[in-house]
Structure formats: structure tokens, C-alpha cells
Length: 399
Image 1: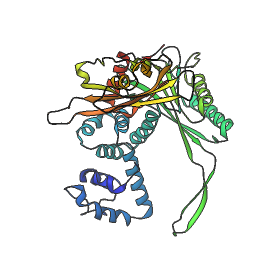
Image 2: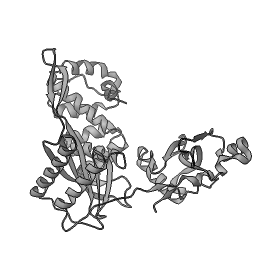
Image 3: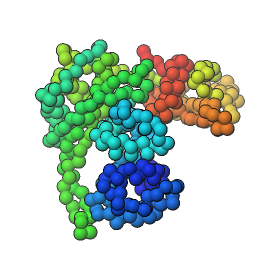
Image 4: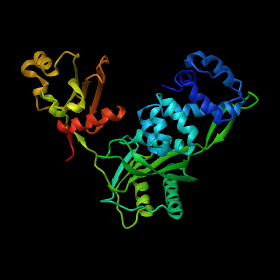
């Protein structure tokens, strides 16, 4: 869903909006418009006031609100927590709205907010198509001096220039942050190097200050990143350009930023072992997981001897997929044939209510061979439960 200014204002408290406009020196301009009570009562007059702001002030305000909105999900909130100073955390935790929490950090520590935006960008792409993981074969110590960073910038620029002609200028922002995404038993510190690459020139069309349509050339920034877990000796590279570009960036990082000789080797992604779902199985879980039931909602099968032959089986909430297939096909049941393998599955997790009077929570986990899933789209709580259960049910083959 794209950004909507009215929706943003309706879901943000008057107190947080007031603190923001005061920090921007606009409190006298909005005096009497932002007031106590439900936000819906002052959204329309507030929209009118925003529209009459000078262009520069209006643009800055809407851009700030749009960036806060970007961090209004689970990933964004974790990013804010991992980048903010400990002094802010009590107030952050006490606020009842994701948008209020985002405005708090933006007003109190703009640099931490900027880093949270890039942290969320990295975490959303982790294990995605633009991600590559590398092992440095044990714990490492990093260099962090300006000279080494400049050497890394130079190598990254050369990498992008040879790839597509971009990279005339490169800037790297270094900072440390917590890893709150369940990639270790306890939150670990990550060294993050956010990379800003000058893209190839593009011509854009827009309205100028006189209301005329005009065009000009822009050099958009391409964002990439390197995250290093020095304790585990692993680095992650998030970048466009495919595996060759990410390999070159990883090697440049190891050469310039790691003490000693380090040879980054690609991490082999875990493989999903979905054929176990062809047979009924008990989805055993621990009481603290809060799982009420698990159902195999659908399976996609592929015939080994024919690449294009696929069958998708889907059942309702009250059905067993194994009983349904046995009833439909009898002795010809595809789930009992060794010539068909499971390439995709949907598991429906039903969780007990979190509190009396609340409804059950249901999530659907999609698993696609060899190693894709939508687990990273779930909340942090459900991510950890799902990862734990997939391991326990032997649906993951780590080789």
C-alpha cells in the first residue's frame, strides 16, 4: 500500500504531531489546528494548513511523514530499536502507535532515524534475490579507518562502472547496530556499511516553481549494503547486479576492511525438504510456541520425468489433504508415487488467543523449493516459531 497523507494523520496522535511541528519551527503556524482528541477531528483542517505551507516546507513535511510511514511495520520498528540510543527506549516502548514511535526517533535523533531507514532496507532484502551471504571462516577483526573506507569506495565504484556504467561516485556510511531478526541465539552487534552509488543519468519531468512542466537530468542514488557479523565471521551483501557484483563487493570488503587474510566463501542456503509432507505427520510443538493446530493447506507436485508437469492440490480448512487425495485417486494417489515430488507447500498455522476474549490468530506459511519462503514477512514472534518448527519437523535440510 502506498503512502496516504490523510491515513497517516488519522493514525498519529496530536501529541506526536505537535512535537514534530514544534521541532520544525512550525508550531505557531499550526496553532489551534492540532488539538487534543481523536485525530479524525482535525485531519481536514490540518490537511488544509499543510497545503498552504510554502513549497519547501510542505515538501519536507510530507517527505518526513512518508519515511516514518515506511518504518510503520514490524521490520521498521525493529530497525528503529536497533539504531536508537538506549536513552530513548523507555519512551519509545511506552508509545502506543508505530507512527508515533517513528516520529519520536525522527525528532529526537535524526541521524539514528536515517540509519533505521537503511537498516530496514537491508533487513527487507535479507535472503532475497539481491542478497548474498559469505563466510570468512571464523571470527574476524575489522578495520574502520578512513583510508580503508576510501579504498573500499574506490573498488565498489570500479565494480559498478564495469557492470553498467554507474558508480562515478560512491559514498559509504558506517555504523553499528543490533541484529534483532533471529539470526542468532541472542541479539548480536552488526557492522553495517551502507553504500550509496551514483546511478547513470536519467531525465525526469516535473512541475517547476512557476507551475510549468519542465525536464532535467538527475543522477539517482543506487543503494547497496554490507553487513558484517565479526563474531560469527559472516558478511552479507545486498546489491543489484547479480552474484558477480556481490562477489566482487565481498572480496573488496575482505581485502580492505578485515585484518589478516580473509577469503570470503559463498554461504550455501539451506534447502527445504518438502517431500515429507506427502505423508501425514504430527506437527509437534512446545506449549510456549502457542500453536493450536497446523494444516497442510496446499501442495504443488512436479513429475520427475517431465519438467512442465505440475499438479496443485488445495483443500478447505476442515479437510485433510491426505484423506482428500486418497478419496479422489485411490491407488493412483500422487502423494504415494515416488515419481512426484513436492515443490511448493502452504501450511496454515492457528495460534491460541493471546488474551481472553481475543480471536485465534492464523498465518499461512508458504514454502517453495529449493529455499524460498514468506517467513520473513511474518512478525518477529512468528518468524522464530516457524523457523524452530520447520527444523523440528525436518522440513529443512542443511546438508
